[in-house]
Image 1 (cartoon, rainbow over the protein chains, first blue to last red):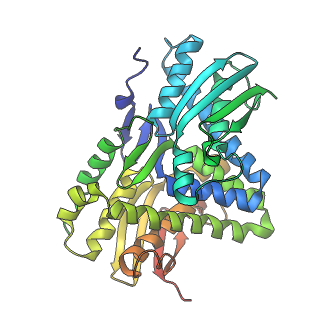
Image 2: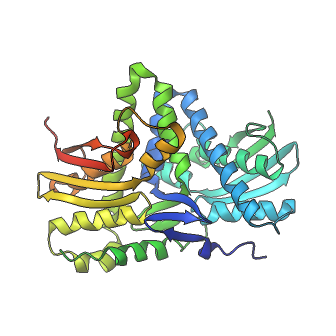
Image 3: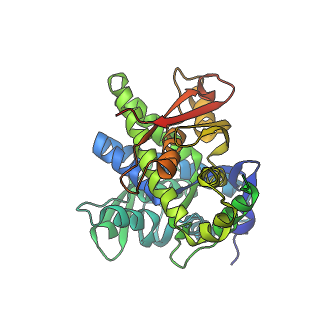
Amino acid sequence: MTIFDWQNELNRDGHRVVISGQPIAMHCHHYNINLQKTLEETLGAEGVQLLYRSAEETNYNSLQHLFNQYKKIRTLKSKLEMASLLYQNCGLGIIHFRKVRPTSAYISSTSSHHVTGWLAKHGRRETPGCHFTRGWIAGALEVIYQHPLGFYVVEERQCKMKRDEACVFHVKER
Amino acid sequence: MAIDVSKIIHAVMEGSKIRESKGIIPLFGVYLSLFSVNYYNRLSFDFEIKMGQQREAEARTLLIEAAQECGYATFQGIRDSWEWEQVVTPMVENKEDQILGFVAVAVAFGWGDLAIEELDPGEKLVMRASDSYEARGYLEQYGLAKSEKCYMLRGVTAAFMALVYGGDYPDSCFTFAAQEPRCRAKGDPYCEFVARRSSD
């Protein structure tokens, strides 16, 4: 199923880079991981929360914009497909929505920009570290189920940054 | 100087549409991600707010240093990449052209309409942007700022000079430091970044 023509959605608007008209920036793993490490080391749990909330809110708004633009994407299945496609085409990795229900979900990721970047720069860590992806998932499901921001809480039960086989996320109502 | 900026932008745009099977974008020697500028702005500016007035200077320093380290590693990777060798190296006639190539890549990445205003080889780089995503984002979300806000571009400006004139990689990251005397976020007509050799 072709959900949307990805290559035509990534464009330039003068000096700005846009996806479906929304301005984006290309950043590499050095910057993304440096920001994460700076926030975690300086603010601790509050920094982790800031990473999560920023990804949640931004993805919520981005997907809302896309769903408004692509009115034919109406079913849960097609919305989840579009979200995974966006994740993949933004270079964020691979995400599998395994069991998704309005009150809970089980999601796994076998490849991720943040995992690849973290391992390349710092090697294995002792605690789960995919705060960006947790927030991204929360924002995606909140917009898909038309809930307000903060409705879901996403926990990472396994993480490839700890050398687990995959990143595994559990979603529940807050 | 013979750097064709449009050629570099074209290469980045085309390359950024290529995905390997795991959803990772390996381009110009780094792993790229494409994500809303609002995410980066919220991280930076909320970090500054959460650090509070007493730690405001520390917050700025951390954000600038994070960007400088990133710019240093990123553009070293870019300079060593196959794509740079194919697309940019044939246009590079001297050291100064490398800086022009770096700036073209930064523009291609969507960081702003950066242009070199002055380049004193080995000593000073002045860059300007009339539309950086940091200044625009701050203005849209918080209104007029009391101080400059383009922390990422400030760090990156210093990194460009460190890579070209600072000495051997990876020991020269902080051989240059940059200021942002003008910023659109505080009402100036453009953002200006000035990198000079570090005093210490």
